[in-house]
Image 1 (tube, helix red, strand yellow):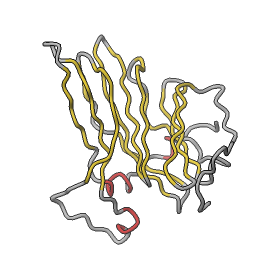
Image 2 (cartoon, one colour):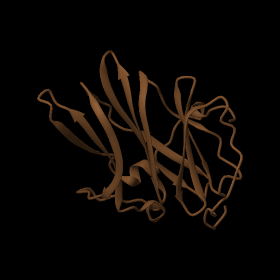
Image 3 (spheres, helix red, strand yellow):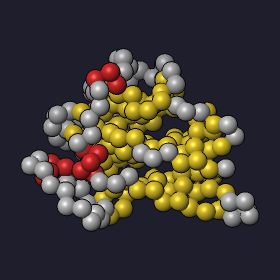
Length: 190
């Protein structure tokens, strides 16, 4: 694990020839998250050393319609990927929230609730304070403590020409951190 920061004018190699909608996101320190689409699915990979090597990509979700927009945001150990897809003349907002684990050089993620709208104008991503009425306990909790949850802000058109906002939080960072997925969820080398 590299313990520095990403340097100004740094460069790295990442083959994007067979990938679409590629987005890189600096997550802090020397961590870089890359998200892209390939063969009808969304993939993520993480570098912990300023892009010198990336984890094996993981398929985080399959496309449900025609992709209109994809946003990626990372902060510290947390990240969120949100999409707008068009399906049967409706706009579908989907998201994945995740947790970056530099000690194990991997990440975990969970798919969030899917929402349907007549017309989404755009989505914006952020973080807000996480407040829970449940007591979260685990021996390893200190590794996963976070005071914020990732959030989608969905700006959509209502029938009367007004723009409305839905704010959708992704819940406990602790639950995202301990999410596990079957080994068949890994992708081929990029």
